[in-house]
Image 1 (cartoon, rainbow, N blue to C red):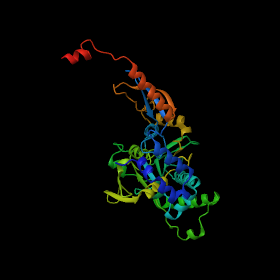
Image 2: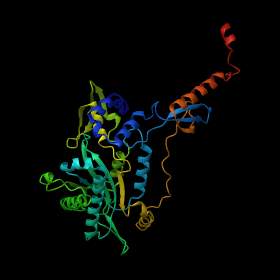
Image 3: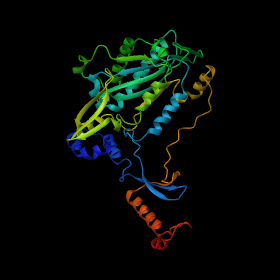
Image 4: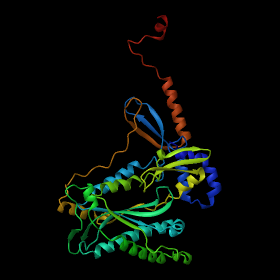
Length: 397
């Protein structure tokens, strides 16, 4: 396994030379954060053991969204919130993909294009749900933005996890189009069911997205209009009770686009990494120069403040009371409010938990505290057990 921080240390000068003019402020912040995450250059925290009362200085984690080490707690908290909002209906995973001809436009205007991509995906599903005879209402959805494919290339698309259900607030009606079978989440339940036509979804989504680009002052360049595909790609498949789909989405939500276990090594300036081929299901590998590999990762660092996930409809955060009433009327077991998942506890060598005394100390300040603690420990008298021989007595024997 090769650490991303080591690759940044080794190839950052070459990256700045080749791609420095294309780096955004968010990219430079990501480089600095990932490079010093939990290293001796990171801000330090002072922790004290609750058992033996020894003190240690520990490095802070960077907390960056692109870091493969950080944000695990945030990912678990997000997943817990989504699982608590499940409703009794078959869930579908609908994926809206941006055509390859528009990827350059999306890269040049990430903040606006990615936001429009999520908004148009939701507007399309909302339109179909309201016009559907069996639903005739507003659906709920959880949308997650992905910008990469399995090979880490630029491939903007949105995954929308939504139940085949809708709420008509005016008539106070709750309707479901496809209900779960006797075994929620089973393979049989996932196979059955039909939500909307993929071809019709793609046609409406394409029209809405082009119109949204024009309203935002980002019309499709004339030389690309003829190259745009006639049929865009929208995939819609049933995913049972939705739990597996939400866990899949949460896995890539906060912890970067690649795990360090998938970076196989770095030799002769070439970084080799692996991914799973979608068609064959087998592991495949690829080698790239170190600077190109870092540039590949930085392309998926979102601008600061841009949300990667959003909730819509009756699954929006402002509809928590309505969702609770809905779950109650539909026979969803009422569970007591679950506390957020606890963060991992640092433990001393003696096994007792450590309590944080100070945070965000500069490295030089932390070094001074560590030196003072070492001097205090050296000056403290050593406790000798009654049955333990003294040094002089031990020498005689």
